[in-house]
Amino acid sequence: MTKKIFRSTVAVGLAVLAASLVIIMSALYSYFGKLQEQQLKDELSIAAAAMAEGDGMSYLTRLDSDNYRITWLRADGVVLYDTRADAATMENHAQREEVRQALANGAGESSRYSNTMLTKMLYYAQRLPDGTVLRLSASRVTAGAVLLGMLQPILLVIAAALILSGLLASRVSKRIVEPLNRLDLEHPLENEAYEELSPLLRRLEHQRRQIDQQMSALRRRSEEFEQITASMTEGLVLLDNSGTVLSINPAAQAVLGTDSACVGQPLVAVERDTAVSRALRDAMESGRAETCMEKDGREYQFDMTRIQADGETVGAVLLTFDVTEQTFAQRNRREFTANVSHELKTPLQGIIGSAELLESGMVQPEDMPRFVGHIRSEAQRLVTLINDIIRLSELDEGGALPMEPVELLTLCRDTAAGLSAAAEKRHVTVSVTGEEVTVPGVRRLLSEVFANLCDNAIKYNVDGGSVAIHVSRKGDNACVTVSDTGIGIPAEHQSRVFERFYRVDKSHSKSSGGTGLGLSIVKHAVAYHHGTVELDSREGRGTTFTVTLPLNQ
Image 1 (cartoon, one colour):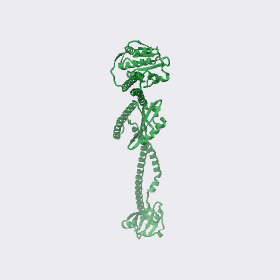
Image 2 (cartoon, one colour; image 1 turned 120 degrees about the vertical axis):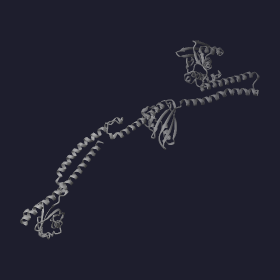
Image 3 (cartoon, helix red, strand yellow; image 1 turned 30 degrees about the horizontal axis):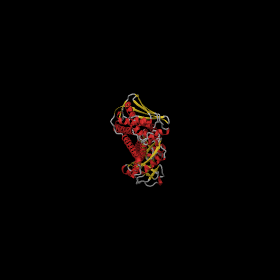
Image 4 (cartoon, helix red, strand yellow; image 1 turned 30 degrees about the vertical axis):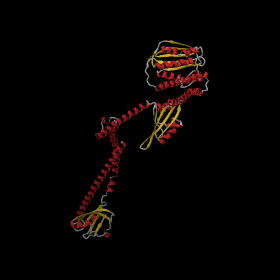
């Protein structure tokens, strides 16, 4: 802006100077023209007076001025004498304007181009007492001649004007721009600037407030968006139409193994799996695509959706879901369905087979009690299996069950007493020790937990072995351990014993009437009480289950 003001100021100065020079030259031209006319008149008057007093020809010969052309004519226009040309060869001047005026009025003047002098001339003529005419003429002053005469001073004036206008323009432009450079655009109305800028400053202040409000709204929305996305368990990635990451929340960073520094990078550089790049390409073409992939032992689903505005693709949204539990649950559900079908079919087939033999009369009378007993045992096994499935279904549904204070030491003693017959049959000694500890819980579920653990400890024990149940308090938790001296569980099976229908020794489990759901019920019932169950077993040396329950729910 300073340069523009400087150039404008210099240009104005030069324009004023040029106009001034034109006016001055015009005035000088007019002045010198009038001065020349007056001098010519004065010279003519002096010459006419001198010729009237003496011999005209001798006077004119002596006069012979270099500045003027002198012509003497008779009244009939014949040239008698001329200082610049041969009078004998000159044409008659009777019709010349100044001559006619002089003959008629005593004096005359005119201005015209002279063919003799080849220039524009100024003519003055005066009639003498003897009737002849004396004429003086001179080359008329031209603008060019005036300009050439004033050229040197004009150039000096122009040079001085250029220097002065440059200095003044520089100072003026700086003084004009300095207040503008000091403007505080953050607070326009607090500036002390030109009054002419007040409307502009008020408008700037209004626009500044609008921009501040819009920026505040954008910041609030951005913060809200970041807070919402940061609290999402799903991963969220925003992409532009070229697949470059615009935003990524912490959940997506964890899934993709990156951080916020990936913003601005292509998604294919952040996640190099071809399935993701293929899903992005498909989403950009068709509008939506999804893929699944495994990372760090977990299953993830990637949903890609195209974003359009006014019919043009502007980007895409990538959502990542951890579907490990769903995948595991679906697999377990399929396995559970298959296992239930198998487990239910086995006793039913036994019942049907025995019934068909009885119905056909092929069973001897002495064998009938054995077949009837087999039908009864298989039916009992079927009822037990159905009851276990119902209990697991109740626990899976997670419905609220009424809780009450349950004293664990008494509960364990009652459980041991209920299994005394089975223990005596195997000659297994069951002992219950510890302190009285009360926890809030569902008595039926807790009773079933310890009944299953104690029953397994007896079933999978050795003849003459022992089972020890101990109740204790550890901090804010109650601990119940059920230990046996049985056959133990091989290490490779210990991680799966809590799965439904999982059996370490299937032949032994079926012979003992097990359904394969007991430990699964234990796990779910303890989890319902926000507790934990741990297993410590050594093959051939026995097994210990430790149940930990919180004293306060």
